[in-house]
Length: 53
Image (cartoon, rainbow, N blue to C red):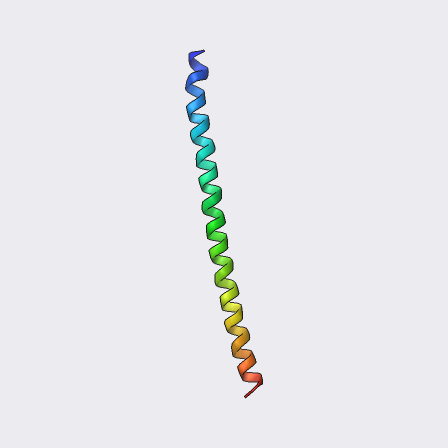
């Protein structure tokens, strides 16, 4: 019984840690995705300006 009580808190901590990591990863992915989109739009604008002088 004592062993099971010691297991529970670490399991919950591990679950919270995984959830935080997932949220953190999603934030990083969103940030990279936004940067890529902004960069792509920037390149598209340069090409657009070049093709229509």
